Image 1 (cartoon, rainbow, N blue to C red):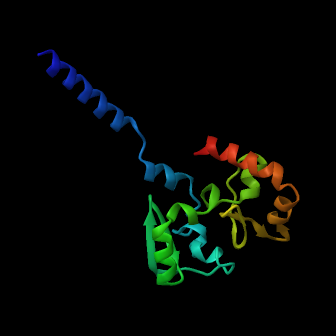
Image 2 (image 1 turned 135 degrees about the horizontal axis):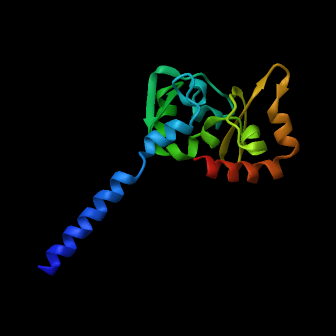
Length: 154
């Protein structure tokens, strides 16, 4: 009888814990820049690592942990499926400079990017304000600050 009671108690705790956890996909969607329905404004995340950002094809897509991506071709889709966490943009695809400055979620220009230590960072670039230039001037401070802010956001 004691074993049944312990098993039942364990089962109740496990079910309660599982139900109390937020959906990983829902949380990710809440924090990702998906204004146009796709991460990276619909650009192919793999193409950045080839140093040539390409607009993704809406007919070649893949959803990773709730985040939808578009790809320029099937080869890039295949590469992404093999290592999706490697290719995902940092900070949910928001402007890395703004996240590093004060934790803000600011839109990006998908053609303004930087790869640092095999991680993709995107930046705002509009109306004569290219935040990648500001990032480059102070990356050593902004990068750890962005990581700290982002860990609090997500």
